[in-house]
Image (cartoon, rainbow, N blue to C red; front, side, top):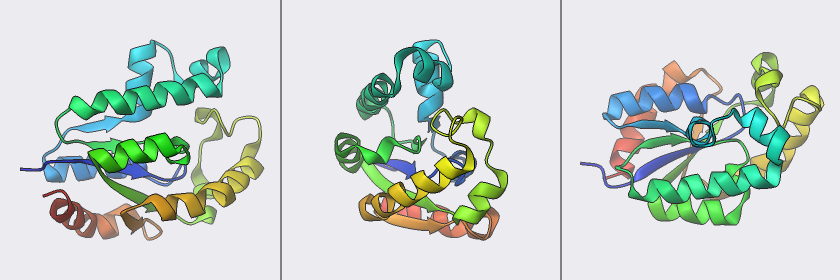
Length: 170
């Protein structure tokens, strides 16, 4: 029986959602996408929250959502790209489980990211992706309990990641 959450952090387009669903399935845990959780609670898309309420309000909602997850059964949780940038969120995640940085090379992210689905990236295009990557990458590495290299495709490391997380969560 697992006793803590797994939080997947990383850049938009790093594979957090795809990996999260598959790892949760292998570990027989619920899967939660933090952005989708916020969308269901707010009744609007993340893009709409950003447009109507602004980034500061979205970040507040993100922290509130993490707090509410304290009472959930252990789950695999994919976070938004900016979640780990706030100390308050990192402290919550550390207290509630393990943090895994899904590390994917910038070139791969740039080659297939869908900018229209990412509110922080829509206006700035790929230049904004590069800027955020350079800003966030050191933070992701410094707050993570584990780093998963998703540069070779997640199927290549799925067994390793599932095994690592299974051990870390017990």
